[in-house]
Amino acid sequence: MSRFNSEEEARAAGVYISKVKSYVKREGRLTKAQGRALEVNWPSMGLSVEQGLINLDEVFGRNATRVLEIGFGMGKSLVEMADQARDTDFIGIEVHRPGVGACLASAEEAKLNNLRVFEHDAVEVLKVCIEDASLDRLQLFFPDPWHKKKHNKRRIVQVDFVEQIRQKLKIGGEFHMATDWQPYAEHMLEVMQQATLFENTSPTKDYVERPAYRPITKFEVRGQKLGHGVWDIIYKRVS
Image (cartoon, rainbow, N blue to C red):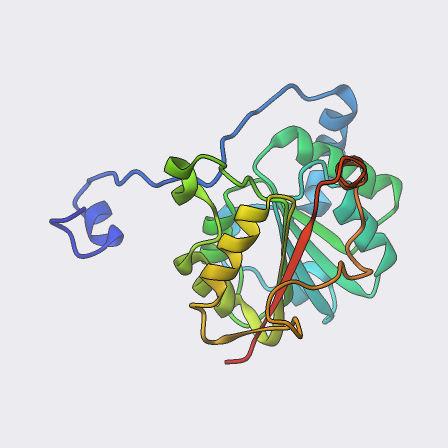
């Protein structure tokens, strides 16, 4: 893009700029239950980037605390959090269709009305659909760590991404990350230390204990039995 001053300028000239993706989309097969959940629940719980900027008060029919989670996997933890905090509104973003279907199936079973989901790239959803200063917490739990050094640039936690998140959080809103890969935890801290408009909520300026609102997964339990660690990092927007 060196001959263009911006991505928008390149697009206007008809030039496609390829982007580094922080994920690999593995579509997988939908089960019958997942397919049914998508068909039945998408009209009431699904959100689309084509809607553009959304008014969350209209979407949920109320004004409430708002939490957005990027990459909810199969949605079990997200549904559990929404079930345990029905006075809070949750927005989930996931690119894998079977995971979206599984999440909607669980949400239907729990009879939730405080959860909405996107099946789309999170960076674009934040850019196009989420109002500035509208979120109380943004969650990023166990993102792909991209272990190989040559792939580190694919990690979603980068300086530009953090600034995008800052804009979407309210003053005092929190960015909560969790990972089971220590080098990625250290990378997260390194990036966040450059974000001077955030403040680490840890008394030791590194990691915090897992908050009660974040469910512990079977994957975590299995890892802990094998001696694996999990690192929670929470930064608060201060400006």
